[in-house]
Length: 81
Image (tube, rainbow, N blue to C red; front, top):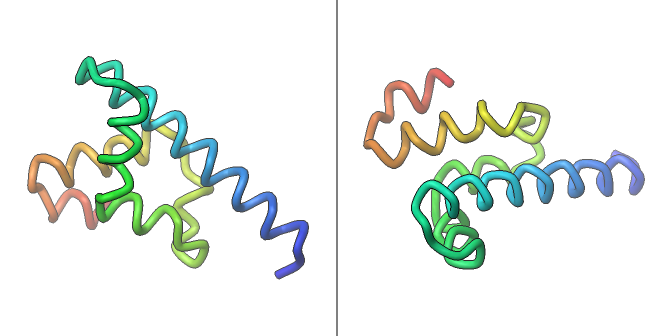
């Protein structure tokens, strides 16, 4: 992987993370900072920041569905998504 590719992956991960934090903050009526801090403790985030998962290539709504499955304890759906 080239440095340019790694940089593009980092940008994609950061963009998805920001979109998810904004969405979660809005839906829970908390600050974006609180939402980001929470999101960073999830298995979904752990998978997102692993470039080998290729999750950074998915849409924000796809990753948000994964997060919601995780938060609802629906691990079967989380694994399918």
